[in-house]
Image 1 (cartoon, helix red, strand yellow):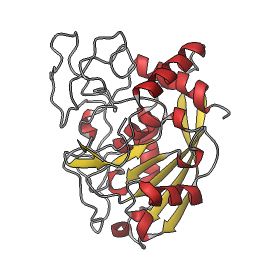
Image 2 (cartoon, helix red, strand yellow):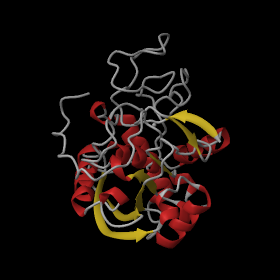
Image 3 (tube, one colour):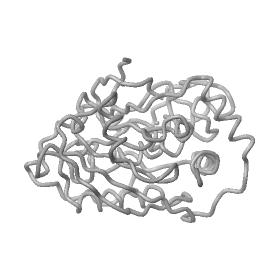
Length: 299
């Protein structure tokens, strides 16, 4: 198990699998959820998405290079969403988030992905009371949870909200992992990271935005650190290199001074506060589209 800082929270977190990413255009902050919601807010953002190995990354790049096609039009791809609320009893204090918070989260996703080919359609919400799954941060409990609940195929997004603990905010699976582990495909998020939750400053809904970015195939902006290749360490040419994850909203931060461009702190795939995140680059959008065609569409 490797340690890393929470990507939305500031806590040091343990990644259960090999971990694999402040503007004026943010909508008004949603009203707080009811006071009984008591999930501990992470101090630093913690994302436990598994890093692909160098060999896996190379295989992905080869697949993408062989499957180049014209990018889909903005908003032309509908992603069906199946939401699984994992709780330990009734009420928000037990993770049983109300439909209103789920609807607010879907609105955040619609706004965040507005300039991409993807739009989201919430097909269903189910609720499961299971104290083991409620605190799952991976391993056998994750396998059991997803095997029992997952719906659809490779191009269907399953979101699980629970109280994973350990300073984590969430994790996701990459498109290239679907073939070998279809039942594990999906996104898991801390229930208090939904809009109006208590995971300040990660309670505006962008934990889901970030993790779904992984589900679409994006890496963290700081992957590969100050890599000097054309596409940097994250496989995208228009995200400036970044030596390490950024927290808070450190305007002007530049950790790779020998490479052009300040750190991409406003990018959804960094670790900054929700209020700081607002951007997917054109290169990231193109990569998501290519990943969709190569690994998810019709699979």
